[in-house]
Image 1 (spheres, protein in one colour):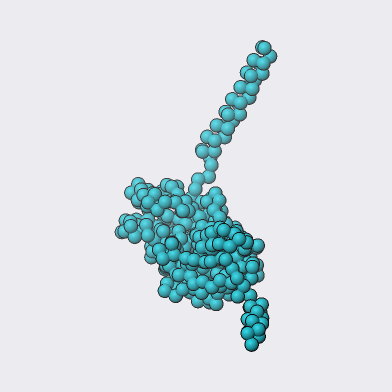
Image 2 (image 1 turned 180 degrees about the horizontal axis):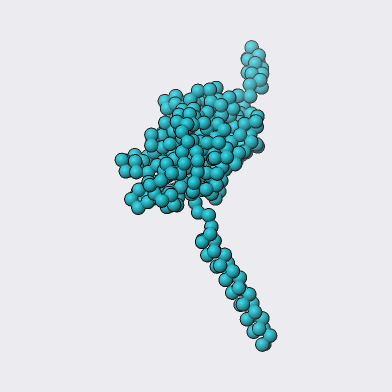
Amino acid sequence: MPRARIAIAALTLVLAAIAGTLLWITFRGEDTSATVGGPFTLVDETGRTVTQADFEGSPTVIFFGFTFCPDVCPTTLYELTLQMQDLGPDADKADWLFVTVDPERDTPEALRQYTSAFDSRIIGLSGTEEQVAAMAKQYFAYYKRVPMEGGDYTMEHTATVFLMDSGNELFGTIGYGEDAGMALSKLRRLLRDG
Amino acid sequence: MTRLAFALAAALCAASPALAQTAVTASGGWTRATPPGATTAGGFLTLTNSGETDDRLVGARTPDATRVEIHSMEMSDGVMRMRPLEDGLPLPAGATTELAPGGNHIMMMDLAAPVIVGAPVPLTLMLESGAEIAVELQVVPPGAPKPAEAQ
Ligand SMILES: [Cu+2]
């Protein structure tokens, strides 16, 4: 009987130690973990080099995609366009960025043409492979080139819309397929409080 | 005379796979206008197999695109992934199969010209049974959802 009790006590201690370690790791992670967003250098639709500094002081809405995307990218840009119409002139307060994950095909000019089908305030950003990779890393945005038959390729990529506040800190996100009303209220809050 | 006509008809049927019988019907086909410079478009429609044998969508063609494939798309952990369905899309007997945004779609690549609103895209669906189904995809603006008339 006492032996069982000792065993239980020992087990409790072990579990407590594990829980403590996990908590410590979690909190330590919060202190030192990398946060979403950060410095980047890219090229805008006109071929001009831009950095995060160009978008500081106002909220920023960022979406990663590519112009050869048949579904998710045009859908997201279309929905953002509708929401920007709802927001009206308020939407001017934010920077709306479409960052390509396929800079090989999405030149600044290709992006300028592509984004012209959506709200004119949406700006396409491209860059070198390295610049785009560094930018995506800052946002923990995943993308990968997937080869297809005939030497062609497509991209898989994070389809989340990132909402950054004027201090360039993560304010929230809009997930793919998220309710349009919910997305709109998030954008309203970003423009008001972000 | 009648016999000759029969033989002729039979020969024609055998020669033309397009005349193969199918219990699969397509409805509500639509696609999206392409933003300037874009050369890919996704096609969406509903396929109903009201027969008693399974069939399979194995390919499609359109004069408007050099390459047409059947693709799957899935979202996991916020990441969009798209893959060619190498074995096509099963069309089980008695079932309705939906090709819709966020999922399986007809992937039209290397478009000869931009897809524009008001100019439906002709598409021929090829089934494993040998049957072919001709459809027209209605065109909505870039990124827009399914048109009301395709409900
Ligand atoms: Cu596809």
